[in-house]
Length: 405
Image 1 (cartoon, rainbow, N blue to C red):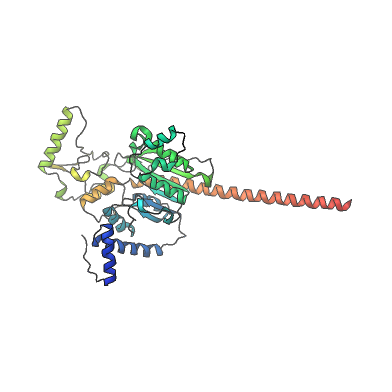
Image 2 (image 1 turned 90 degrees about the horizontal axis):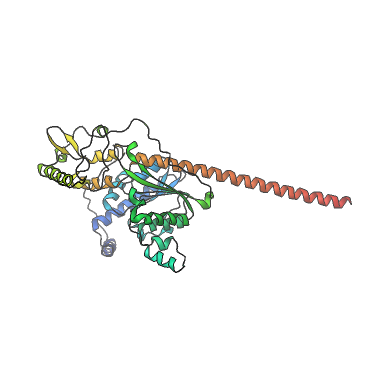
């Protein structure tokens, strides 16, 4: 529930605000709220030591699931970007900063230097026609030709400008098969042309949360910094017993989450129709001792993919807090938005403990590569010093020989 604050502005400030609103087609509330959050973000950043851990940026940040994963490794987020205003609200409520908006308008050179780039970029269609035409004419193409016009291009231009030590990208499992594999080919080739050694795998979150949720992770390390020989593996090791649906359920749930008779009948009729047609579409009643289907951003519509059975009455949706738990968010994570927006946000989010596990592997490898690089540089300096000493000694002996003659 939002609070109302009345602010008196000088004429000059009010006129400037009015011009800004006209130019950006935004509301007074959104503009003033954004300005206040940016002010608070600056104050928060001033209080954080720049000496703590490694630095990273959080692109297509959503509600900050990836940020939680890298902060767990001791990382310090120096920049975040997310265009959805409701996700920005949740992000601010939990991290004290509002992510910057439209990434396509961001100057990559103004983004702070960082060690790791983190992004859950959307999958958009890639235009291959222009690239194919150039190739048929024997003309060279680069990643800008391949990715221009997609949000992946924004990831590429930031990587090119800032050259972080490593990156971690997350996307839907089907990214590999999108457009018969051509989209993923463009992505891997583009990252390779930027001189990053890349590794990828499809991982399932069900080892960490009671949900079948497969996502592709793409990890890269800077070859210009670390050389050509880099090895990395997604050695994921869930800890503890297998999670179950009943572990994330709340004890006292409001009746508003119980399906109405009308909606429940619709879902039953819909499932029966598709079953008769030989299709597998329909609602899903979650086994309390098992795992759930994949939570989607459309969950707010009817909750059909994950329903909880109730004795003596219609099944119910998960609550927003249960959805948060299903994605591995702690109960201390603040949910400041409506149920509808919360369902969308958690449906679009990541399995936090899975991402945390991968983030740990990425950081461990980055530290190993840094240490190996430092050792190599020390060895090179030592060898250079020895060669200089030998050369100097040889020169002295030659001069002594001449003097003796």
